[in-house]
Image (cartoon, rainbow, N blue to C red; front, side, top):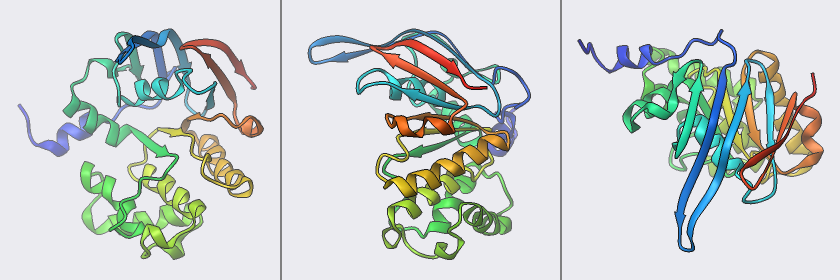
Length: 246
């Protein structure tokens, strides 16, 4: 019997000890476009374990963003299966996905997507409010702690527009960590940053992977590959290389 949204959310928090943490099995994705059908992914198999820092690389249109959208449940496969810690992500409805994603996956975007009318701290608190993961009186303290972790605690009560691009990206990372998800997914998170700031942000992601988070990042910047433990290259929706640096 349903006992409330909080208990249902708690039940959807996934175990993190299972391996592989992420598994795609023969995943294909077809889109209807003006010219007809477009096959963005073609029977992709992929696995990732806890603590891996995985780069997904390839040219524009190769299927990189579609691949990570499969992992996060932002999009669903046309065929194939997506499992995250044995949770069948491909089989959930939109309400289930929203709850599951809020608890288990932190998403970082290229253009930050911070809410402009909320302070930095309020942006970080928002996922906790949505998933009701921490007592209300502890949420601001946790937000400040996360902002300290990414090095911008002094910006907590400013609006995003008052921050530099690098500071906004750090705030977005803190927001992605709000509910302590085991997985972080990032889509071109350094594409809008200068090289020095990119290195600092990449160092943050590498440190999170070293702490046990699984980080999957789309990037086209080859000079960042030194940070990754694995690199998966896509071309025309097919995995053509999967290199493990361990």
